[in-house]
Image 1 (tube, one colour):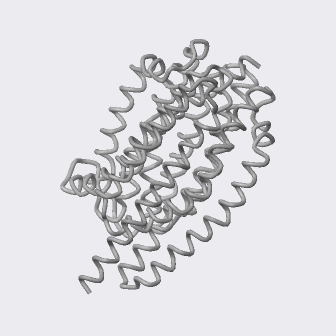
Image 2 (image 1 turned 135 degrees about the vertical axis):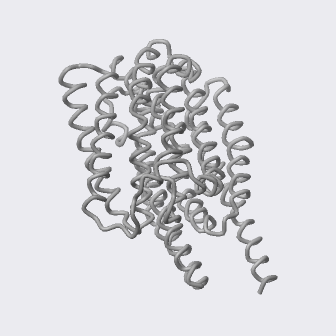
Length: 389
């Protein structure tokens, strides 16, 4: 049981770190696919090189900064270093997936992820369960899965007719890089701050001990599944709405927003009820350690409302992205992160008999503030359209 808890803490800390570090270039790439001739390789490669150096050579101090429990520090460091060495695969996958989504093909990235999941599961079974390599085996399996997904993503364009040609010049710094960054970085900053807040939250929870950290790690796996539908809605919303507004069909774009929120709420309410009422059962799928299950369930109780609020917030962000009010969206991210989520989580974590349920409430509270801010943005846009009309 103790070794299982160590693995959970290692996974929690390392994956939170890797997600936060990779969100910059993944968001930049996904937002920039509207350009027919955009920089394909140079800028992402530079970003990956920086992250490679940070994650590989500073793995231990970063793991210590994350306040990983002493008994899990070596495992965390090994996992971060190995996964950091495979950061180029993450860059390549995001770049190629963004290319497919920009062409209106969301099925191919899904296939890539599916293949990666299968490879990852097989790798974990062989290296972790079979050869007992623990964190090292899990990290190798993760990197191998990413590499396979990149191979699939490279082979697919070779068999698919693209509406443009890929030239050597696309792999060098060119004039598109300025547009590339101007559009992507504001939203990347917003997402980066959001992920950093969860990274800090991870550090706050780590201070509560091994069982709390492990329970939080298990809960995060369930949270990741719960957030898949809102995230997918946001990405599809941005693409579909941009097509309608580009064609001058503003009313249809607003109808799309309402439909997206409705679909998100339908699934969100179901997930909310499942997480709130059967969170302990969900946690038991990942561990048999009773204290870890109890701590995971405690966090899910506080987090549960997020599944409903995120369905609204993500749909609204997907709609607002088209209007390029990036500065306002960054302000929203800063406000949610620095003035709501982090302060609330920190205050709850330092209370006597700190509760993971109360710490978990920081997420839906900050999201509720984000929804209110987005409503204000909508009112601002409507007023602006009326003046122009």
